[in-house]
Image (cartoon, rainbow, N blue to C red; front, side, top):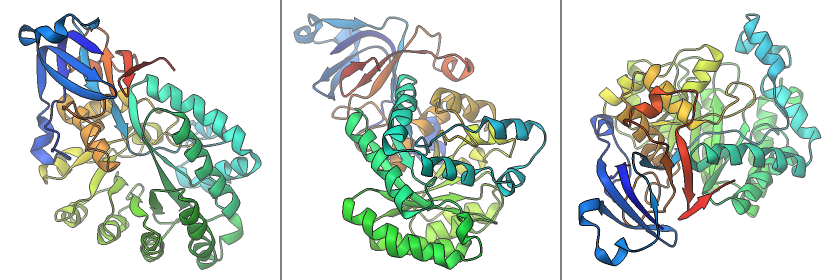
Amino acid sequence: MLITNIKGLVGLHPKEKLVLRGSEMSNLPVLENAWLLIENDLIKDFGEMDSIPPSISCLPSTDAVDKYVFPSWCDSHSHIVFAASREEEFVMKIQGKSYEEIASAGGGILNSATKLREATEDDLFESALVRLNRMILNGTGALEIKSGYGLSVESEIKMLKVIRRLKENFPIPIKATFLAAHTYPIEYKGNHQGYIDLIIDEMLPQIAKENLADYIDVFCEKGFFSVEETDQILKAGAHYGLKPKVHANQLSISGAVEIAVKNNAVSVDHLEETNAETIQSLLNSNTIVTLLPSCSFYLGIPFGNAKGFMEANLPVALASDYNPGSTPSGNMNFVVSLGCIKLKMLPEQAINAATLNGAAALELSGDFGSIAIGKKANLFITKPMPSIAYLPYSFGETQIETVILNGEIYNG
């Protein structure tokens, strides 16, 4: 595939650049009036139109005049396998009920767990298939999906098997995260260690035997899993080769970030609540800060301190958190818009956070997240746009015209 007359080829980071820290995130290299050659599923070459080699100039081409070509979004935090929506809780939020009040009334994660236990694997696969296809058409070209609505051996395994089927049926890389430590099921409310033992002694061995997960996650928060419980679970996961990706500091400054760093977490996700100690604990680590602004938007909770993290020279990623309770959307274009509007990130910073740093939070940035020779050809072509900033500026409407995955146009 040859794409010509590209107004701007976006995100031309060197292939060896795997993550962007702090001030580096302001640098979004763009080649104007460009061409791009894709061979098989890889980016073969690119350059300026006035220097296009005669040997390829005669090839059939896609004309991208007045359009931009971006690397696909890399969404490193989602919960798209679920049984049913939770719009009744949406109404409760409007009536003034807090996240904690909804959970204590039988809503929240336990609501999704009840519905998921009743759903078949095929039901879950079919509904997640629709969501994932919609996400891809909105530009997502790499994705993480968590379990965590099962809360039993049978249902957690069922969720992870659905994620495996999605991996097998879609042309994008998908990472699976085991999140049985999402909350305590009702039958273990008074026996935390009993549920932790269930995770460690029954779930983890089966997951490892069937190779069902890449990562392990814990919702470390007051009223959920303590720092000590989180440490115990993460260490057990490491025994089976599962790296941590931790839900941290969503509702309070809990010590979650510190314990995640201690366990060499790939990323700490949420961080709506942050202080100087939180930032300090991340400074000498390789852990990526993953912010989820559409969750803050939906719940009405604080937005992550993106500027503070970047000023501390930390890598920041943006992800969707697509789930039925706190972020019923997987549209990464809106996430990038919120990165600019609410997190006060420059368009260049937000785009880098949703592409190369998102890929880094998936440990995929060697092949995805930027445009470089030898990387996978997961891209999208925009509609005609006046500038790069127009994409986050025009929130609420898509600027994506053509999705390319593995070097081929994807129509869903």
